[in-house]
Image (cartoon, rainbow, N blue to C red; front, top):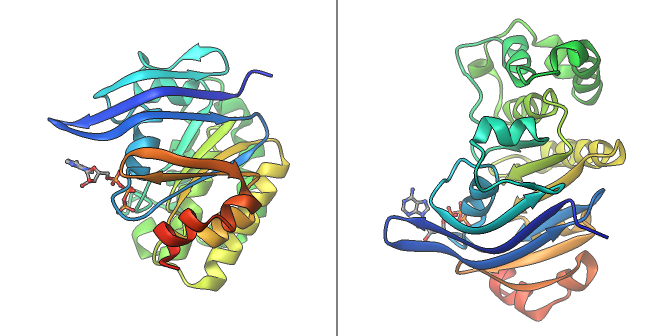
Length: 237
Ligand code: ATP
């Protein structure tokens, strides 16, 4: 069966420096896939290249049969991919409600706005309580929930997440990862980029090890957890 996302021989550049080297990656429809790897491996570069935020790239990115090498990032969103960027990037001076509304600007999304907002509030009730508060006053965990909620307001088929657990207390990571599983169960596919290898692989079907800009190992999440290279490169075992 054709994968939902098909990345072939993807290379990405910062000026002269090549940050991704011939990356091949497939995400099946209905899958949670994790890309794990150490600092500087190229994980953020990979999600930014798929989302069209990083334009200096060569190769093929096909999403549900659509070539994503040409569209701008807002068009990539219209095709059904939403990104939760590293560092959350919520609009600190705007209210929680307005941050969420912004996620639904996509064509066709307005009609479903109320339904999606109810769903986001169901996942993260704290965002309803804090609706009129400025996003900058939220805790780090709440901001991460807001960033995830904002992405969901676009009604994506594929969610890209860049290090959602970074800097958060384990109990908050539990909440986020529980929400990710619920989102997945509702039919959204997920590409999760994480340094928290154990947590990421625990909720994934497949894992991919990125090292120095190259995918060096792919397999079922359970086999990846026990893989000596994953343990050596990511966990220092
Ligand atoms: P981290 O977990 O630290 O975010 P990462 O796996 O996400 O790491 P990237 O941030 O994608 O890795 O970085 C991959 C490589 O590209 C690194 O060598 C990094 O120094 C380089 N790089 C990243 N962003 C830029 C940039 N804006 N300009 C130049 N080089 C960059």
